[in-house]
Image (cartoon, rainbow, N blue to C red):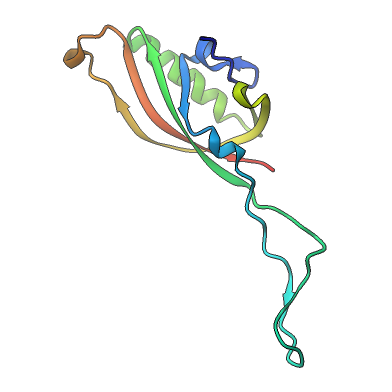
Amino acid sequence: MAFLDTINGNNLLSTYKLIIQTGTHELLEFPERKDSLTNDWREENGTETDLELVRFKDKEVNLNCIFIVDNDTVFWSVYNAFFNEITKSGLQNLFIHDHSKTYQVYYKKTSGFKKQSKRLKNVPKVAVKFTLTLEVKI
């Protein structure tokens, strides 16, 4: 199976040994609408809402990712390379192959890092799961 997702043109799997497992569906959700201007006239019932100018909020997405590498040395190399790329100044271009779309994003945070124990599973690979939170520009 080919993984063709990229960040700034760099293939996530071949360059960073990274796979987005779940969460790309959040990119498909339409953004939340910003509040419109309203006026509650004293002499009229209800509230008057200006619906002429429609604007949307940016949205935050959580992508569940995993690094899969041969050893700890390779892990730290791709870990540093990926986070140097995703945290560069300005907006980053995240291409999701399943959507055939590039999203402009910037890094917000990571959480939930979990390293699979090689000793318990007797597997020669290093696998590190985590959640990557990005802000998507509309």
